[in-house]
Image 1 (tube, rainbow, N blue to C red):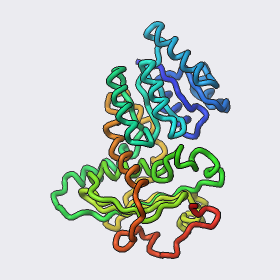
Image 2: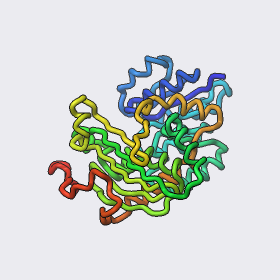
Image 3: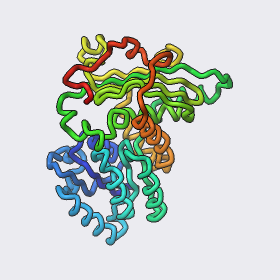
Image 4: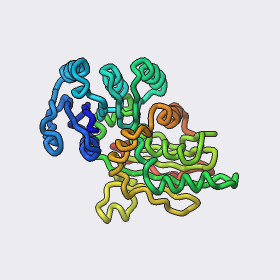
Length: 327
């Protein structure tokens, strides 16, 4: 049965993945909104969708549909807006009696999750979060192997994610910690989520480096110690990536052995939608641990690197370029 969808943030970077997922799961997009009218991408799948530049008119249209025949109602609202607007737009979805499918992070401040849980119950609707790394076959296999192990000794994990972002990044909402949540929230939330999903609850956390373009630290989880490094600075890309013209580097090693999780990283949204439509999507409960962890990390003081530092921090001279050094 085809369901009606609406999307908030139709002109954004991640929106095409949601549009494709709606199409590939056999559903219809009936309404879209974005203050930027560069939304010609709608023609690829849903040329008949109504577009609203003002979210107030979009809201009014969805409310009108809600009060009309059931077959015209919007059942799901996809939220692809800047991070700091997510919870407000999720509330809009719940208010018109639709389930919300929200990009990561679901919220920036963990206490906003409490309000969303109350609204879920009040409106009898669901809030889903896109946590696609949990669907990677390599991650599923690894989790199964970890859960079958009886040994108590913690694994040693090294996680590295470097993705080049140009000067535009600093001038956009993504470069504002108040709007994006900073590097650890904006590009790190998926990785923290999957680490907790794989290796269990947090026992301790260390923050070794905290700059506007890069962060690093160590997590001590139930089943692993994880040294992590996140960066949006091209200078941190490995030489082989630069030589091959690649703009991103993802690496996860377990006891020194590389775990593949790059292939398919960007092509999982349709599977996320399939899980949601089948009633198996990840929601507030699943999203909460990583959001609380990142909030804790951001609130921490930096500590000594000795013993648990990421390999990229072993050289004490590792510093950002002058133009990008945190104030």
